[in-house]
Image 1 (cartoon, each protein chain N blue to C red):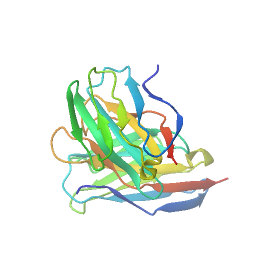
Image 2 (cartoon, rainbow over the protein chains, first blue to last red):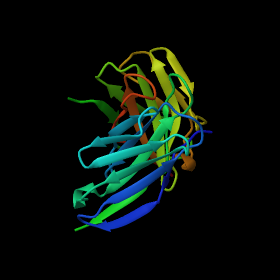
Image 3 (cartoon, rainbow over the protein chains, first blue to last red):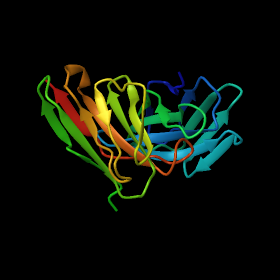
Image 4 (spheres, one colour):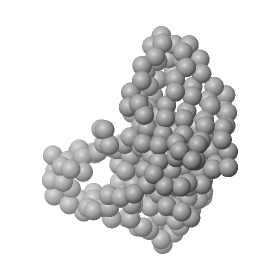
Length: 112
Length: 113
């Protein structure tokens, strides 16, 4: 069944460094989303990238999508302690008007 | 400015008890979903609804019931609680399915003893 899978499971970096997280999925998709979850809170939408887009930017976030490799990456530049959170990719469960399914997430720790 | 509201925030149940997790959204979204989050397992889809009167199963529906009598509300019922249902439950809503931004509630922490 379809599911996004993030890599690495955990990442620890110093403030100011860049953080890169990857997501792989199994079947063809029309779009892919990234979400962030602070400890003890609900998930918050970060960015959506469609299958006809290879790269998308939003502030310090850069997302790429390689449909031939069925993978996406999320880059956070110049990370801050406030970026400490878990990050999830989400892909459509099936084709059509379908819910999203999420991976297990990457836990990012940014050390000040 | 409420968004998606879940109640209760915390609940402790005894094995075999039943309860309902409430979820309400004020954004007039057609799509609503319930996920559970367990350590090391990510979010797993329990049930979802594409509109009032329409529900469908996700990956882990066993032991749970849902109904969607109004656009605003999507309650999740645990019929006979089991320790395996100890989890954090998230309700979410969106204008449509995949391709739309999902808005999550703050979660309901459920412990079954």
